[in-house]
Length: 367
Image (cartoon, rainbow, N blue to C red):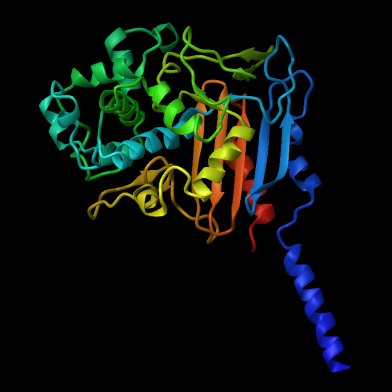
């Protein structure tokens, strides 16, 4: 009789353990309630648990003209979430033996100024290069308001940096988030591979992973399928604000993708489809700084690898990133040990995709 009772108790415990990761979909829906609309921009959310989708929803419309419904195939501008793909492109060239992390900028571009001798590929990847911000150089170079400045591309960023004579700090001694570094990395990929950056991404990442609708958008050269346009809320209502002077730079934020394709990306990371676990380790190792390096980001210590923030959340190890650009807010949270990934993509800038994704995470992570 005791054995039967123990068996019943064991079955109850197993049952509770088996359902521990389940979340009432209504609780997630409540987090995104403000994005529900038939006439306003919104967003999309995907939750992957144990390698499978457990929640996927679209809210709002892709644009104000067609009022198309946002769904799992809708492509959003990823903004800085793009950086993980740029980093992967560089890592694939290292895998090929065509590039080294300790190679110097002047090794790749012999005509780069002398200050590039101190900048290694590793510094560009983990934001310790000290490069000048190209957005600031654009304003200084053109003497015009940002909205009147022509769109700059990755090659233009490299050209601006070649006009400089020094970095903000000695490379490798401090951490400072750098869009300039990732624009330069896109040009490194082009120089070393002999291909356009977007084509390299297609051939080595998007194509092999069957991310069929993910592209590095180049106006006049390709088109974004199932495209969501960025928007800003104004007093008179919503206004499309899809492009800015920096929107044509690919390496730091020019990739478009969808929930469906990013699920394939997450699977590739989980199962090491592009690089081995050993080859991925540098990307998941925080930048090492000397004492007093002051690696600060938004009032907290920054732990950054190659294209990923690496700080934990409520004791749960994670690799994550967010993106913010005109009209778009994006976030990806990967809690590897918990086998939990949350992706939020929004085509409006009055929300925080990062905050929304963490609210969802709070529903799944053990307390």
